[in-house]
Length: 504
Image 1 (tube, rainbow, N blue to C red):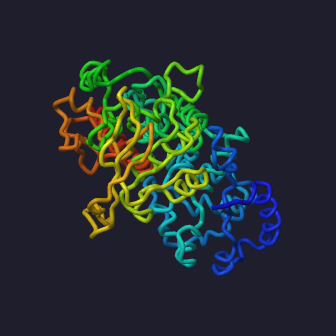
Image 2 (tube, helix red, strand yellow):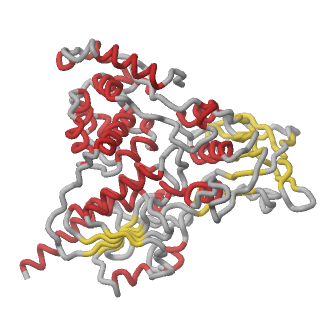
Image 3 (cartoon, rainbow, N blue to C red):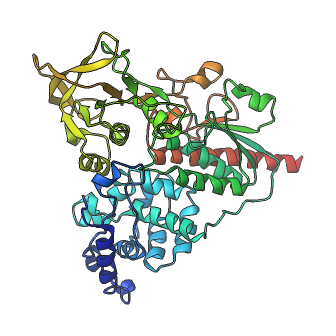
């Protein structure tokens, strides 16, 4: 990871860019791949563990232009093929290289209205950047063109200059679309359906918008202000938002169509049902799901001690069970909330961890300790029913399992005790069951995920679904991809109906 200061990186970029400004369009591929990749400046670890400010600070203009100049402008756009929302990546990057930032923003917004969010939290290294030809030429995906960071740069540039363009909305069609859930999939559907001139209402169960973007991702990785600004674009397009509205309780899903006159409904209620280990001691005081822990800290702002109505559990020694991004978020949040020691306990090795390498590296820099090839066997408590230790087992790797990762195998007699007072379980989430429980007409699989066809349509006419409620817990950009597909299907269905109505 980078240990140069933001100032040093800025100076180096300014010195470097003068070598390329006059000859960018004539650069050969070999010359482009020789341009140094640009590190992302970040807060110093010893500083950032004491605040909730964003860790990554973003590129300067010079850094962004140099990084953009590394793009080979490939004829076969493999990066676009691997982007779930199909942003024309080479085209927007070429605009950055020429300092045409407004044009770059316009290109991104053809496909996505959430660039500041995607540029921060999308796993680009396993999507668009994975097949980048620069990375392939240098035999290192980490040296691919930093597409996500460039996307973030453009979004931040728009916001800082006040030049945020609002996408054009077609004439009103008289059709109404309801979107259930204001997470990434729902926001994409809202944007794409509104662009076509349909009236769109987004129903959100919480008092704040953003779904998992807000309650699940800490501000040090995705500031709430960024979420608010992106949603504000939708508001200015005419999208209506209703918070504290629980579809399935406040109003039945079918009532939206049968009684409220919506012509289509998109369900994007996500995967908010925490999974647990099902081991002894999991009901002790001091055991949390990562979902609850992060919701208390992020959505309910429990970090504002003395101000927040929702408290956070005081911890000294914290164990986080799991190896994904949520585990990293929970561990790093625990550190910021005052824990002296935070351990990530994962039953495989670092190689098999699903968390982004960047997030793991940030966690290590912040003093998070990793216990690989270990896992909880049972949780121990004191006479007051509070956690005071965890009995663990050591593992070794066996053959790959159905996920392709090597299966962890327990080493007999390897038990040991880890002294902790708080345990955060971050091993995944299941689908939100409320819609399926209150809408028996809708078909779900054995895990409660809503079943859809290739157009994202459910078993009920006019009802579509996408994101984590269909995929299970996945990524923001995959949810957005499902949202785009669902919106296209809804728009086609409504356009066909409008066409028939005109004939009649």
